Image 1 (cartoon, rainbow, N blue to C red):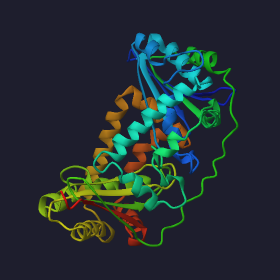
Image 2 (tube, rainbow, N blue to C red; image 1 turned 45 degrees about the vertical axis):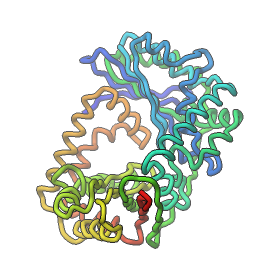
Image 3 (tube, helix red, strand yellow; image 1 turned 135 degrees about the vertical axis):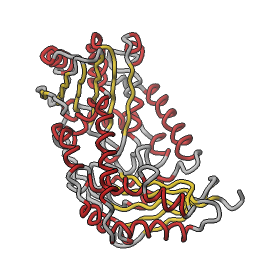
Image 4 (cartoon, one colour; image 1 turned 180 degrees about the horizontal axis):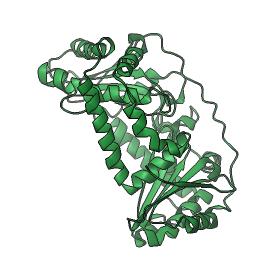
Length: 414
C-alpha cells in the first residue's frame, strides 16, 4: 500500500504527496498530459521536441542542469504517445531547488530562435541515428500507420518525418507550449522524506502564480474496427529477416488489460515461456522472439516480434506463431503457467515499489489515468485474472482480420 495525500492549486495543478521518512531523498515528478497523439497530422514530433526544449533554459534560469548538479540532483525525461514526463531526484534538503526549476519552466520557456534551432538539430540527428540509420530502427515508422488509419497513434513519438521538425517555427512552438504545458494540464508528484504541510506551502509558493491554460477537451477520433489483415513487405540492410505482427487490444484502463498483459507473459516471459520453449529451443525457427503490449491510454497494440533463423521462410515463421496463438484460444493454459506469471507480476511490482522515483512516477501516471488510488489496486486486478480470462482475451485478440504484419527482409545482396 502506497499512502499519499492530494492537493489541488487554484490554477488547476494537481499535487500528490507521498511521505517516506526512511530515505534521505526526494523525487519530484512532473507529468504533462500531452503526447504525440495531441499533435497535428502535419506537425508531428512536437511533444518530443519539447522534451528537449524544456532543458534549454526558462524565463529566469538560463541553464536547467547547472543548479541541479550543484544541489546533487539527477534528472531526465521521456515522451510517449500519451504523456510527457520529467523527473528529478535529489537530497531532501534541496527540494525547493527542484520546485524552483520545474515551476520556472512551467511558467515560461526561454523562447528564442537560437534555442529552437539547437534543439531541432538535436532531434533531427536523433531521428536519423535511432530511426533511419539503425537496423530495424524504422519499424514503428512503418507499423503504426499500417495498424492505425484514423487515430493519431499512427505516428511514433519522434514524428512522422524529419521535415515536420525542420519546418517548426517559433510561433508554432510557443502556441504548443501555452496550450499543453500549463498547470491545469499537469500532475506534480513528490515522494520521499518530506513534511506534507510544508511541502504544500512550498508548492503554493512556487506554482500558484503560474496562469492556468484553456482546459483541453481532447476529441481524438477512435480507430475503426479492423476488418481485414494488413500486410507490408520491406527490405533493408539488416542482419536477419524479422517479422512484426500486431493486434489491436484494449486500453490501459479497460477491465481486460491485466489479462492481456498475462497473455503476453505466458507467450514470452522467461525461458519457460511458450515462445522460448517451442519456437526457439524445440523448433529452432527464431533467434529471438517476444510478445508484449503497448499500455496506451487509448486502445493499443499487442505486439509479436521475432528475428528469424537463416533459411527460415516468413511463411513458416508466421505459421508457427499463429499455431502458438491458436493454442491459447482453444485450450486453457495450465494452472502452473498462470501461477508463474502472477508470481512474476507480484515480484516485479514489489521490486518496482522499492524505488522512490518509481513510486512518484506511478502515482502521477495513475492519477492521469483517472485516480492515483488505483495504483494500490494493481496487484488485486492481476490476482483476479482467471484461466478462462486468458482464453477469452486470446480469442478476441488473435483474429486474422485484427492483425497487421510487417515482413522485414534482409537485403539479398548481403
